[in-house]
Amino acid sequence: MPSELSAKGSSSVCEVTCVDGPSTLSGMFPPGTNLLRALVEMGSEIEAPCGGTGTCGKCRVRVSGAVSDPTQEERALLDPDELRAGMRLACQTSIYGSCRVAPPDTHALTAPTILTEGRRQEVALQPNVREFGVTVPPPALDRNPADFEELLGAMGFAADDLSMPLPVLRGLSSTLREAGFFVRARLVGEEIIDLLPATERRPLLGLAVDIGTTTVAGKLFDLRTGHVLAVGSRLNAQRVFGEDVISRIQYASKSASDLRALQERVIAVINEIVVEVCTGRAEPRDIAEVVCAGNTVMTHLAAGISPQWLAQYPYVPVFLSPLSCRASEIGIAIHELGRVFFLPGIGRFVGGDTVGVILAAGLDMSQSLRLAVDVGTNGEIVLGSRDRLVACSTAAGPAFEGAHIAHGMRAANGAIDRVGLVDGEIRCHVLGEGEPTGICGSGLIDAVAVLLRAGIVEPSGRLVGADECSAELPATLRGRLEMRGGEHAFLLAGQVALTQRDIREVQLAKGAIAAGARILMRQLGIGPQRLEEVLLAGAFGNFLRRDSAIRLGLLPPVPRQRVSFIGNAACAGAEMALLSTVQRRRAEEIARRVEYVEISAFPEFQDIFAEEMMFPAGEPS
Image 1 (cartoon, rainbow, N blue to C red):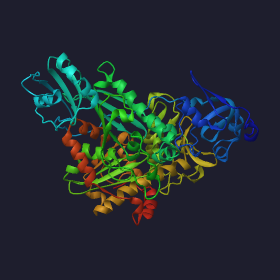
Image 2: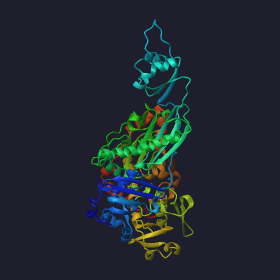
Image 3: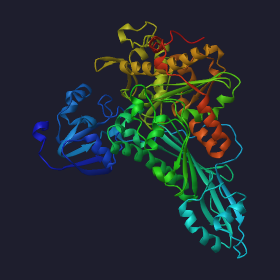
Image 4: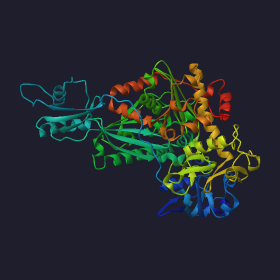
């Protein structure tokens, strides 16, 4: 392997070839180009949950050719044998000549489990998209009409009630005459975006989208009936720039082109969903409006607005108010004059997705106190009733998405998603029913809960060694304890193990969420016993086991029957705002009245966080 100094200047352009299973990608890059950036530009699906800082070790690739020497970060995460075999971290490697790259066999992404359904309230159909079929009086010499004003009059509007964009106005007179003055006008809000002959009846559609940090889900609706026509979902293609919002803010803040790259990636995903849900049903231009729910960072990035100040004290977003723009302004390929509406945010990292959860769950109308938790890399928590609502965000980190976990992965084939203890034996369920290749978030929570109950993990989070175990511990469990990389580990199934470092990551994530919930309860002066219901929202929350989450202290100690799963409530809230302008106004009112709590500024935050990192000493009563 050439040293960095000898490699520099060896070539004016470097050819990179990436062989990933049956696919081969190639590209030409200047010397010194970061390998991760090159792979991303070539279209590789390689992931770097840490955003390219060299801390997660997930972007491992085998490299041959002229590249830089291993960095200190690589030497810490890769053993000498791996380095000698050409294994590198793409984010830490620079190319200085032609090279060949091969991701390891475990790199291939299988289709993830993406949650698209969420519990929501039924609403009366009153969409922002409307349609009028009208007969316009033909012109006559004894009057002084203009075609636009005559159309508005026939629709029952005054001349200044509605507007018509120039592209539609240019064809107005021809359309009226060709249609025999019998036309169909299509409106979004107070703007006529289309004028068709009344005999041409095209679908009238809208799309609700949840722009998540990890996944993007969309639902296509018939706006005449309110019925769902199709559902589509994808992984958020921004993930190659980092698993969490802070990593993406940092990447977007580097340059205008990097911000544009992040925006283009998520818009491309939305457009893929548009094509998918329309295929065999309609044309993308039949979609007149898209309503999006996303956290503050995702909303900024989708709109092409830099969120850089959200990562710098005092963490200020560019906007929180509802945003409406033409779809063409941000590149969403629907009707050329169609619009996009982003649900408003509440404060800093509590965005429109949380407003969607409140809207769908009816927290703002609830007579009793309810706690809603959306567990993710940026966990959002809302507590209250119709009298008062408080909300916060917690930097839980990407542990529950599999990042920073030795064998962590998303909920896809090969992931251990459930762990139990039956008659002294560990039982693991693997998605796809094949051999385990890793563990996803729900399996991780189960595994730690099982080890707590068995006494293998102490309330402090310490994973005990085989020689420290209780004499009552079955030999079948004792035999699973081993040393890996100088730390204690517990073998779950196959080669998938849970390490001491993994448990510490779980403690950090659960501690952040539990601290946030506890601080909100203090704001309202209540204890867990006052909670009528705990609502788990989001994809990860939907697959959690109640008992495991309560045993870890991730959720407040409430009776398990008070814990409910509401699925993708953010998308459900976007659906309600798409189908009803009344609900859209309600969403705006929710954003105004919810009190945002900055938990890091709470006087006792550090103490509460440290306490909540501990696991409960026993089963909650």
